[in-house]
Image 1: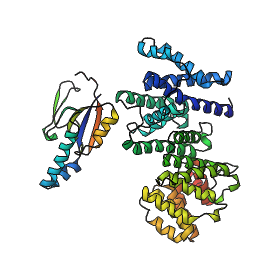
Image 2: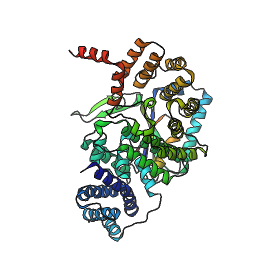
Image 3: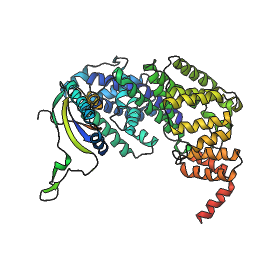
Image 4: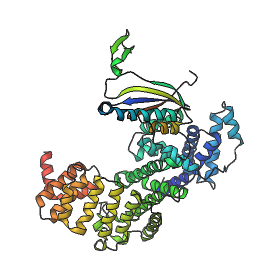
Amino acid sequence: MTDAVNNQLARVVREHASRLTASLIHVTADFASAEDLVQDAVLAALRHWPVEGIPERPDAWLFTVARRRGLDALRREHNYLAKLTQVQWPIQPEPDERLRLIFICCHPALPRQAQIALTLRVVCGLTTAQIARAFLVHETTMAQRITRAKQKITDARIPYRIPADEELGPRLAEVLAVIYLLFNEGYLSTAERAQSRDLVDDAEWLASLLHELMPTEPEVAGLLALIRLHRARAAARFDLDGRLVLLQHQDRSLWDRNTIEGATRVVARAAKQQRPGPYQLQAAIIACHAEAECWQDTDWEQIVLLYDMLLHLAPSPVTRLHRAIALRYRSGPQVAMTELDTLADELDRYHLYHATRADLGRELGRPDEARIADRRALELTANPAEQAVLHQRIGYSYREETSDNDD
Amino acid sequence: MKYVLLFVETEQFNSDMAEMSPSERERAYDRVNEWFANHSDKLRGGSKLKSSDTATTVRLDRGEPVIIDGPFVEGKEIVSGYVEIEVADLDEALQAAKTWPGCPVVEIRPVEFESM
């Protein structure tokens, strides 16, 4: 099967799976069994469609299979059976049913990894095998994780509903965190996982579904814009040899200007609500970069300001590091270095901290210090694309040394 | 649906309590009493337990029953009481647990056999 066919299949399944799950829960009032039926139907689709072609009405096809499975498996459960035999497709669920589905998958009583896996399976219609591959986990491990989460939903009676107003803030934050992690997982993975599922695409799809279902939540808009702005620059992130290209050196003509403009509008509209949040601010920062015609045109003043706001809402040493990087271009390398010194304890295990020190060290004419920092950064990153950049910077002398060490 | 809330005390909590002035401690008890009053329609029994110094553990997995002085896990976090509550679902149980003004850790466990 070619990637194009695969991707198309994935998109069609994703479009319909969660709606079908929501509809079946509507009928049967049972999350776990409805979800099982849909997973069965998805697996059947992935077997049949590549051979027979995608049916004209994929939703009705999936429904028919799910319903037949349900009837087979549950003959003894009369109530359930009676309900299932009566239903016709399409079922018209409440418009917010998919939202309930998202909230149950991302319930804070479930561990984060299970929230992510369940969201992918239930809302995006991925199979357990696909999820396992995407996270480089054994399929049985992933299956256990999902089974355990579903068991807890049933046993501890995690409710299938949209949280009440006073709960909505923290619960929505939980959902956004899941989508954001999914995005990061996909964004940071590189060629080694090219064969696996495009999690970035799933993350964008989820954010856009959530935005459609909760159009007045500014942070949802912020996250959607954030993801789209990152993706708009994807073509420039790697060179022809698959090496990571830093923002400063990216060919901006490869950026997708339409997407950037669209996403910038989304975040600007959200900002009008005057309910700023970390995702909106991060999106605004990337928008600042994206709007600059070239690196020299970057509005560093504005970016430092946005980082200040971000730190006010969500203090974090990593954000302070990013602010320090922006400071370098606004106020010079010495100011940035002084700021970095204050982060030494907290970020000693973070590769980007040392890579930044190395950069500043070179600029301040301290090459020895810079080389030590680059090596420290290299020790701390597991990402092959980032490792390659650092190797390049450390240069030939480093490779010589390591090959000596290997002997 | 019934859940048990297990209240867990930490060393920090106990030393904080010990350092409180009588009036501060009184206010702390008032807050706990208020929580009980606010949740009275959901509460189905429970109790504060005496300190873990008074605990005796019986182990039945070592051949003959073994009687041991002390709680079943020796640790810094000690179960100090429990209540059973009857609510619609986990979110309601969480709501009750999140507003608990006493000890700093609460474990929520669904009750398996409700008829007992």
